[in-house]
Length: 234
Image (cartoon, rainbow, N blue to C red; front, top):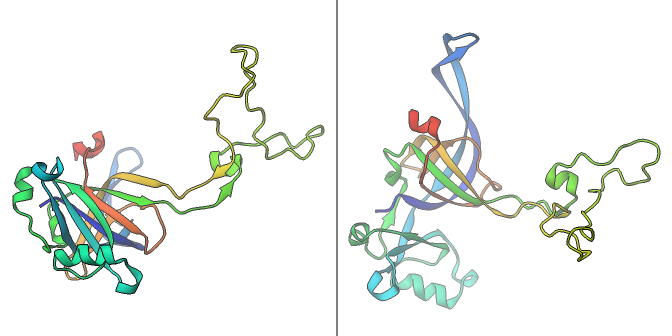
């Protein structure tokens, strides 16, 4: 089965353990170290649809996660999930699979956090917190104008947007400039987070580091596609 699940972010905590750390000029000491970890509740997910190359043009499994009351769903989704023999679900997402993995799948099959056993690193895809409309200083890290005499209430303005009438003759500013606008509320992929622990009873996955989005926000977790060089060395 594919090593990918839908879930939600529970929050952050820390784990304490004895680890060897290098301090100073190569001096190794054994000290109590706390690692910040993010707790994710992944699964149980159910196979709500099986797509094959003969019918749909590609092999994929549709996963469904999260119970939802029928009155808050639609008749189409309720009927779609009923064909797989599962109750109405809140989130649906496709996962591309190989022909071998497709042969192991069956409608309504439950997938739990156990599929991540033996996986050292995962990628987490989530939507970042929306922060509304922000100016260029907060959104892009501009330092602003000088706070001296002669600068008249323009301390937080972005400055010139770059007139181009001299070189192109159009008189229009260059497109794609860093200006004020909506900040956050975008899909972000955090790659190669180390798997710290798995709780099979509660379907919890502990990963080292932070995950975008607010608590109780939906996340998509998959086995890491590519690793950084320093992590490959481990």
